[in-house]
Length: 280
Image 1 (cartoon, helix red, strand yellow):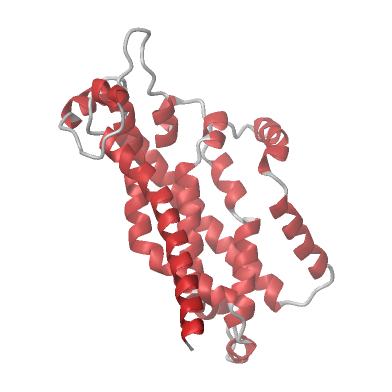
Image 2 (image 1 turned 180 degrees about the horizontal axis):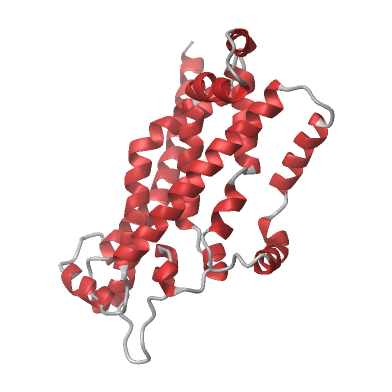
């Protein structure tokens, strides 16, 4: 009995130790970023510090004097993240629903194609994607960023697995018997049932679109359309002095909304992954 308790204690100790290490690796870089946002350039060059400084006002002035239009960047990022998340999650859920409910010729082939697309790196097709957008004259247009997210392969995969574990076909058949159309059945019956999965994917989609730098940087050329990651990239110093405090503050400002959003919505990630990963 004692030996079994000792083994359980060792396993629990190892598990907690690994989780503590992962927690430190995830939190410390963000904490140091926030600390450096309050310190001066000279203090940052002296080395690391765990104590906040009192230079945030000067850093903010240095940041805004470089043309860092934070209001415009916030608006552009929120606008893109909202529509990319809304369209991506809704139409991906509709695609997953169609693959799960309907039996049609080529269904298995289409499902295999979705899995294949998900495994391929996006960088392989980016040149062709840019050339296609240039030919249809959608460069320097938000539609070039929003339209490709309408049906994400990873989101479709997750939602289909979630539907297979939780959706009862009796509910769908009952709605059809009552005279509800397929669109109404999907919107009023299916969507409320898969709310935890939708919330989970909405978080991932929002964070991904908010942090996306490469695609907007390549497709957008008008400065007024720049997102926050694009503005942060432009925070460069001159040949005489680089205000690292202002640069850290600009990066911190760009990630604070993500931290707040994730803090409030993280419970949906846990419940969504748990429900989607267990088949009843």
